Image (cartoon, rainbow, N blue to C red):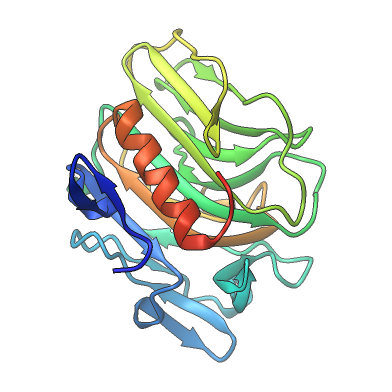
Length: 244
């Protein structure tokens, strides 16, 4: 029962929270499909069947057994040139009018540009990213207008973190571990199209690649409360062995 917290007197894991529709966990070796040293498939642990795949070998992330604080992770853009990307097919279980998303990740290099960690883009939905200037950030759109909020401070290469973003009507926020940026209130809805969900680069064209390692990724189709969000952040920090 390692890495579990006590929340309201009960043992906690992300699966205890309603709305979990994607849970990718590189520490669970059984969820990974190998193509030699790269990964062609990453199975969803949420029970919703939102598995991530990549058939093209040159685009597959590389398995790193000690990728984040000695724990397994998948390295994207691992050859220093080609963007890596995993794709999750659109499904009804990924429909949302609000959401909360978490990524345990660690940058390997600074590409000096917007680096897309994960999200949907058709071209207007949402993405969690590292912004130019190295801020933890994200993009959200209602289909016409787009917001680009980011937290204060930077994400250094080689430093692991839990990055989170949350949207509900009129309230959009980004966190770097437990540190949150300003709440944006300009959009009352988020566009929910039928594009696939992508990890590691932007949309289907491999633009704005992320150069780093992703160890865990969770997507909820609702806005978690601050208490719930902090419970997930604390759980992930303990599991991955770094302070949040």
